[in-house]
Structures are given as structure tokens and as C-alpha cells.
Amino acid sequence: MRDWSEERLVRYARNRACAGAAFGVLYDRYRPPCRGWAVGYVGDSDADDITHEAFLSLWKSIPGLTAPYRVGAFLKKAVRWKALDFLRRRQRCQLIDPIDIESFVSDVPVAPDLGDAAEIWTQAKNCLSDREARVLTMRVKGGMSCLEIAGQEKLKENNIRRILHRARFKIKKNEFFR
Image 1: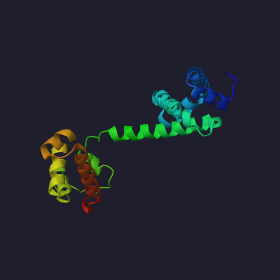
Image 2 (image 1 turned 90 degrees about the vertical axis):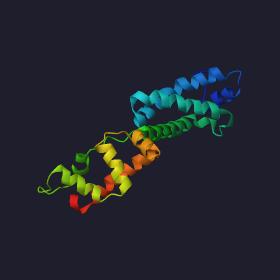
Image 3 (image 1 turned 45 degrees about the horizontal axis):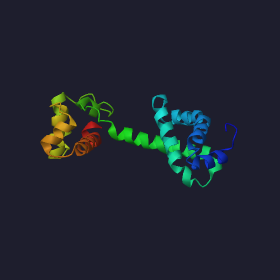
Image 4 (image 1 turned 30 degrees about the vertical axis):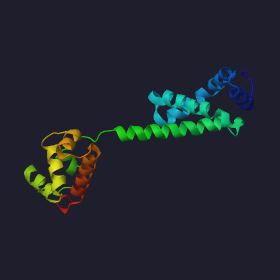
């Protein structure tokens, strides 16, 4: 079985009586390149998970596979899509970094005669709506997490992150900080 073509292995894998052995040969043949592609997308630590998900996708698709001689192409595409899904999930799960006033003005050119931190804080709050200023104050001065602020403001945590992002953007766009 080891020297059979992909098309013949897929035909045997469609027959559920021989599926395990035929699919095992496909797995042994394509696992190293699939893992290499996955390492390129997500790094070494998560490559095995992506590889296994791609093979599960192949297993589910074998009965309807229209081009059984293109298993390698199918797996490469499956690895790419599984890696992109993984990266999107990971990006959604990342929390916003703690915000402090230095992060607002550190990467914006500031004139040397800006004054003290209280004046900077006042100017920053002046360009914000009441809700944005309140949320930013709870985050920066109160040290509250997005979840705690969401509970107090009766909003979803994602909305709090959006408010903080918009507040930071407005502060950076303020003429005072240019």
C-alpha cells in the first residue's frame, strides 16, 4: 500500500472496510509537509494541531473528493484555511493591553513645555465624550479591567474595548498632543 498512488489510496479510503489502512498511508505520506506548512503559518507550538485539523478535514471530505489524485493540494489548502481560522480565533482572544497616560503621548511628538501630568490628563479628557472620559478614567486611574468596567457601565466587554480604542485614537488626533 505504501507505494500506491493517491488516487488509489483515496478509492480504498472511501471503502470504509479498508479506510483506516489507506488513510494511515496518506497520513504518513503527507504529515511532514503539512506540518511544515503549518509551522510557516502559526509557528512550531501549534503546528501539530493545525496539521491534525487538516487531516480531519480530509477524512470528512474523502467520500466527495472530486480530484482524488490531488490530495496534496487539498491538504495544503486545508492547512492554510485551518491556520487562518486559528489566527483569527487567537487574535479575537487577545486582551487589550493596560492603558496608561504614557502610552497616549509616548509615540506622539510632544513639545517640551507641555507641563505636568495633570494638565496632560485634563487636555486628554477634554477631547473625549463623557462616556469615553469616564471609561478611560476607570481604566487608567482606577486600574479596572475591561470586564469590571463593562459591569459598572452595563455594557459588553467588547464595547468597552472599542470605547477605549476610540478614546486613544481621539487623544492622538488632538492638536494639543501634536
